[in-house]
Each structure stands twice: as C-alpha cells, then as structure tokens.
Amino acid sequence: MATKPETEEGSGLADGLFLFVVVLLFWMLLTGSLDPSEIITGAVVALVVTLTSRPHLSIYSGVRITPMAILPIINYLGVFFWELILANIDMARRVLSPSLPLRPAVVEVRTDLRSPLGRLALANSITLTPGTLTVDVQDQTLLVHWVDAPPDIDIENATRKITTKFERHLKGFLK
Amino acid sequence: MTLNLMETAALAILGGAVVLSLLRLLLGPTAPDRVVAADTLAVITTSGLVVLAALLASPLYLDVALIYGTLAFVGVVAIARAIEGNGS
Amino acid sequence: MRILADMFLLIGATFTLFGSIGLIRMPDVYNRIQAGTKAVTLGSISLLIGISLLYPQWWSKLLIIGLLILITNPLGSSTIARALLKSGVQPWKKVETNTPEENSNG
Image 1 (cartoon, one colour):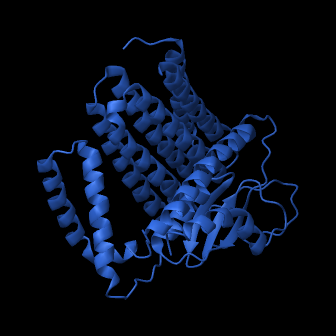
Image 2 (cartoon, rainbow over the protein chains, first blue to last red; image 1 turned 30 degrees about the vertical axis):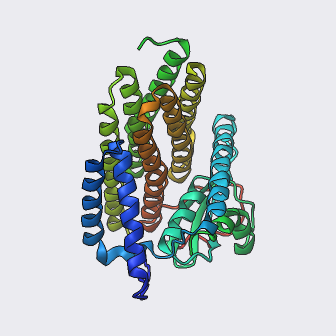
C-alpha cells in the first residue's frame, strides 16, 4: 500500500494525542472499570504505545474530530449499518436462489479521500455493501469486485453507484 | 443456563454453518479456497467463543475470543502475503 | 428481554449459515469471499447483540469484539482478494458474456 507520509510537523502532536486517547479508551473498555489505579495504568500504557509508534503516526493524520464532525459520523454509521443489512438480504437472496444470479466483474472506482484512514474506512464500507468487494487500493483508485456489475459500465458510473453514498459522509470527519 | 427452543435452534444452525465451512475447507479445490474457508471459520469461531462464554456464564472466554480473533486476522494477512509473494 | 435476545441470536446464526451456504455454492473464490465476509460479519454482530442483551454487564468487552470483527474481517478478505488478483487468479465469468476482458490487468 503506497501511502505518502504527511510532512507537516505541526500535525504530529495532534496525531499522537488522537492515538493516546484511542488507546486509553480501548484500555478502559477492556478492563471495564473506572477505578483510578486502572486509569493511571492505562494512561501509562497508552503513553508507551504512542511513543513507540511515533514513526508511524502519520497514518492517523486526516482525522478531524470536531463538534462539527458528530453529525457526519452519525450519518455515516446509519448509512453503513443500513447498507450492511441490505447487503446481507441481497446476498442471501442470491445464495438461496437455485439459478445463482451472478454477473461478476472487476471495476475501478475513484475516490477523493487522501488520508490512509479515510481510504481504509471507505474500502471496508465497500466490502460490506451489496455485492461489492474492495480488491486493491492504488492512490486515488479502488479496484472493486462486483457480483452484479451492469455490462459496459464506465468508471464514472461505477464511482457514483458504489462510493458516493459513503464518501459524502466520510468527508465530514476524514480527509 | 437452561436453553429454550430458540436458543437450541440457534446453536444447531451455528453448528451447521461450521460444518459447511469445514466442508469447503476440505473440498478445496485450490489453496485460496481453503484460506477463505479458514478465514470464515475463524470469525465463526470467534463469535462461537462468545456464545460459549454465555453458555457457561463465564466472562473468561470473552478474552479468549478477543485474542483468537486478533491472531486469526494476523494469520490471514500472513497467508495472504505468502500467496502474493508466491505468484507472478 | 430474553425473547428479543433469542431473536438476535437466531438471526445471527441464520445469516452465518447463509454465509457458509454461499461459501459452498458460489462458483469462484472471489464470490466466495463476498458471501463469506458479508454474511458472517452481520451474523457475528447480531450474535454479539443477542449476547449483550442476555449479559448486559459484559457490554464493554462485547463492544471491543464487535469492533474487532467489523474492522478486521473485511480487511482480511480484501487482503486475500488482492493477493489472489496479484498472483494471477482470474475472476470467474459467465460464458455468455461477450464483453472483452480488459479490466483485470492488476
């Protein structure tokens, strides 16, 4: 996966803080207690994890957690779970019908998301939505295996059909 | 805990899913098919361990499920890398 | 409450079963990945919701397991698919399609 590391010096601190908070939250969920000694241990562990992964912190650049981002996050999660349920009903229908209605093809779609986390979220969303599976991510293009691809579809149409519904919301909190 | 009819049915269906995935694992026909079957089986096992925790009413198995899921993911990525290096 | 939990458990188990039926019936490995990933992910999430209704005090760990499955399962499947495409496994096509095969030169 070719990802260009962001070279802005100022963003390093924010990325580190983001990772620290995520690891601390993870620790608190894992222990399941709000005991001060647990939280202090968690903070130490989170600090060690953040410091050890300092060379790779640029992965977390592009995350924009602001009060403005709450609405896109909720929208995105709503769209995501709705599409996941649709995907499963669709797949169950295909699998259970005796004739196996399939028209598989590999198509390319384009994305405007720059950050690694943004592309990861988009790729995972595509994999879990009806009939599509992300095969590869190359810079601005995603290779997608489509179970029911309309014949002669071009990249613009495929992009509109597959990525737009997620990208619209993802852009609210990821670059 | 004592099981009612719906829970018994759910367990039986889950068992059927495990058997079918195992069948794909045995049938192949190619190595990638087996990898995919093993990947699916690993996720079913992860949630199966959570169900086991509920059956035995012991949260210890939740940690087992967590570690199993993580290791299975690392294993799948490692196998995928091996396939990638092998071809072309 | 228990009835609701049982419904989630039953739905989860059923979707997992659909996933493995797909694993058996699909014609090639890419379609098998698709069927396997989607159905088993939703199935697992549904099972976890069911269990968390039965044992509400386990919610934090169940949430972590759910997130783990939600993030790693599609990612693992994509990794396998990418490796397959790179090592030259061609996706299966229906025989009667007459479109030229030009879009799978990854």
